[in-house]
Image (cartoon, rainbow over all chains, first blue to last red; front, side, top):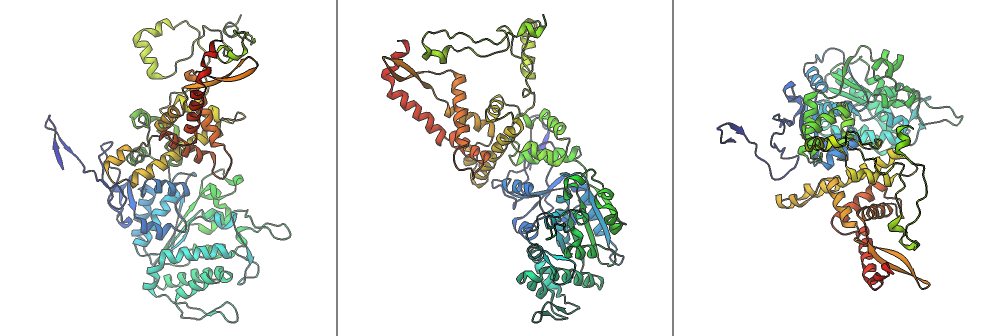
Length: 389
Length: 233
């Protein structure tokens, strides 16, 4: 829509939609002569041109992928307040999407490690990749936040499958539900079958050649065998991927927690159960090894996934420790940084457009300069600074 | 003698002017470390520019000024009333906690109002919804500020509650005090920030418990208007 001013300069005016909802993806008046939104809601098509722009995720998509976790809590509640989940397309995600699009799936699985300070945008980049993964036809193995499995374990029982390891029945059932919600339709379509017989007890047996959904259902119904089911499931997926039946994308947030030295589970003799003593750890470490192909592994390491004493550095070598680093080596490190100028401007524009940044003085150039200084363009700090005003 | 010595006096109890202890509310002097001629600092950049333009700055060049306070700043988010409110919420010097509570309260106010805003279907409805938490806070305080207050005055053996005029400072103080007390009431399942948000929005709409308390005070004043002349003996 073109308008002519008195001085005969042409201004482009965007139509203001009267119903404000994420569904209609409103394109509003340009705020700093730069568009901060994009209509491209399929992450497979996100490229460098979409950098620093917000793309919206519809409610059903959000429920499907993030109901079991994956979005930081505060960000999720903020998105509910602002009437729609929008994620900023940033360089780490674009880089990953580019790599994943160009992967040679015959070669062994490549590991990508997102690293950066706490609050800089790693979890959201991973959420973006989760959305991309499903749009691109990957089977998603998504662990939303690993420390939840070790720091806040509700019940830990000695494993029925492995003598010296521990089960986490409640967490396992939760994760199986999350997995089946994320991959529901895809699994039905792919019709993957088990390649082994799994004997759970005298009466419960999962025969060879039965569909994977049976395995998942067993885990969902019998918490006792849920962890064992996950081990079996991940094993099957690995084999299926290597034999080209499906393509698997492993996305894990807070990977360094697997190599942490603390959990909240204590044995009767007061000794602590380490993360490495849990069966789920073994399962996921096996999946993140590069001894299979036709897939990709995207992982994030975060200081906050470790107990407070181990948060000195955000770098992968420190956070993973010797065992972790040797497990993941060689990997592609991708740094997630603070906002650059364009992203920062875009974020403020978004807050203003969504009526979140209310103070009139803060909307001026002076206000933006102040926010840029006090937050250091750190995404989480900016969110906290803008929240009350 | 040092500058600070010049500016400050030893704290002394000021004699209460009136022989009638009942008027102490009015005549009690503020307990200040500074001598009366020491001016308040002007730190707001816009105000400073105005002073320089109008020539006032020249006159103030050699006037002693009080020390800068920690919470005075030129941030675009700075609000005098909010700062005062945070100080009143503060207990045992825990300023950061008090600030966080009030700021969380403001965030909740925004959340509640935005929920209404995004539910509204017409532009007219949307225009009516106030989203700025500071505006809501100011209006709420205005709605909660009493216009009269009661003071106990002894006449002939019995004490009467006499309605008297109220200063702006006292009215503002009472509004803030009542608001805070209401937010700290009884069941602690709903925490301070949420209660503050609900109370602020209620007061903004001229409803709620704090406004009721003000209105009760006004009613009492109205009931006791017969004793108003006791103010002057």
